[in-house]
Image 1: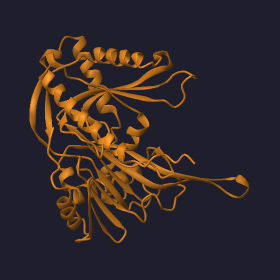
Image 2 (image 1 turned 45 degrees about the horizontal axis):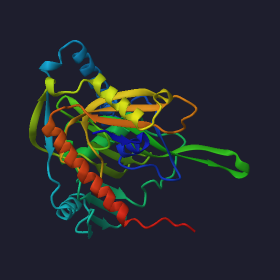
Image 3 (image 1 turned 90 degrees about the vertical axis):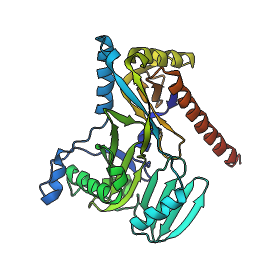
Image 4 (image 1 turned 180 degrees about the horizontal axis):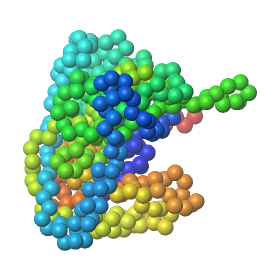
Length: 356
């Protein structure tokens, strides 16, 4: 049940949106905490990035090596059904100050627009996007950010509590801070210098003792360099109930999982000597917006990067369930079939390529 996804696509999904064509996205550098009033309270929120998932993987690997895995218990969760996307969009639009707005419904979900603002709710995943279309990826850049990283985190956290209370009720940790950049050349080709035009603070959910990995289970709050809100996207979704609990005897050992992944890569014609494993994670795997998913199951994620000049720009992410229980694997298979059918339907509706 491997899922082969290019790392670039996953990383774009972590903040809910990719970069605009004109821009370039890079992680924001660490800054000294500001002491400007209440905003300084965010100084303790150091972004986790991927450390929770890598530590969880290494801990489980050590548990197996030391013979402690038999005592482990990991719950399996079902995700709460999305429900009526149009009704949710209207309710959320009123809460966010859009009033009744203009409602548009489609097979993909529902959207409410008012002035320059748009709110979208996805019918399959329940993902919510709220965006100021006039300013999103359209702001003026600054040579240096006027606020410290802690200030952007604090403002994003306040927005999360006030405007996304349902998501804020989950255990959301600061995941990463990104800056979106422009770079331009002046007359004669001379570089005008890079500027930052937007900052995104991403939060990720921790469920029990494991983080949620993948594109889902995230909230991204986008701000201007001055700290003004311009967009949020949430792929956080409530769990309905515990479906099962997997004991240590029902877990696939991390080393065995990696072996299976690399056997599959070899069978697919990938030369392992051309790649190096750069990161291994353990967490509940969540797909991103527009995706079909009904259960949350612990997965391993293995990140491979080119280690040879024969391979250029082909990073790989291989994801494999950490459980061996047949009933759980069957539920995953059903989700995968539904997701594959969704993608096939999209391809069937796509216009043929322009061959002119």
